[in-house]
Image (tube, rainbow, N blue to C red; front, side, top):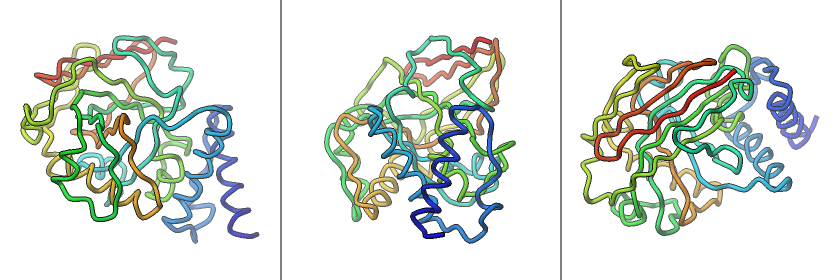
Length: 262
């Protein structure tokens, strides 16, 4: 089997899992020889397929940036994925739990870019200047890998376990916030479910943005102006099911909520 045939096969298996709702075995167990570059190639093949079908990239995500998330999923470095048409939900909306396999939610201090950002070589100051505003966001993650039995290879190939995003309505200039100290609390059905500050995300969400720009740059990808970047969760992800309502309080950035129906 050629490398391209292998990439196509695994991309198709993950795409079928989206449609059928039936997760697949970990790619890292099926094929222990897969590399991180192979995993990103599998991810990229799916993004190209989505673009061909009319679903275009509207944003980017960095995953596994907090120690809590790395411990939760048993990995030791960040990864990235893409946010495309169909992943975005309005704050306060209700989505069907049947659209997902084993969904979880993370609260994130997100950026809206006002300028392109292209690595490698991007500095923190360059990233800061590229940000037009900061918003609160909820990220929906899900795994097309059975029982969340993932390695770094598996989650990368699965578009960093992306499933959806809710972007808050309150947008503030970056310079008006101390994002490292910004406290976020997460509630599930009114009960405390997690908390953290921006510092939990690689020391600062800006560091995650720098990492993303420079890592994507090695693959020839530029972060585009107008895009949303969700830089990673401030706390461990929370599983959700039918009837659940999740609300994150971002202080000056307001609150963002999402509910799930059967």
